[in-house]
Amino acid sequence: MFEKEKELFGELLIRQIERIDKIKLSEEITDYKNKKKIIIGICGGDGIGPIITLQAKKNFRIRIERRIGTRKNNFKRYNRTNN
Image (cartoon, rainbow, N blue to C red; front, top):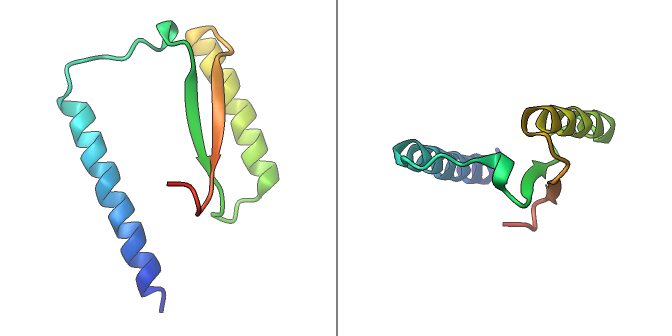
């Protein structure tokens, strides 16, 4: 039961760990204050509901604005059909 889902989730985790390892090896540090736009991905469907997701987006947006002093962040919604 759920074998295919576990396999897909495992592949996703491996890709994310590889991405994190690559970032850690990089000596380049991103200066987000000088970025024209910051895109933040949101992946729904974990059961927490749209109200909680909306409040989390608001909170995250405020924290980013306080940290880097800008409103240039954009949220991109992902679902199962996005890669």
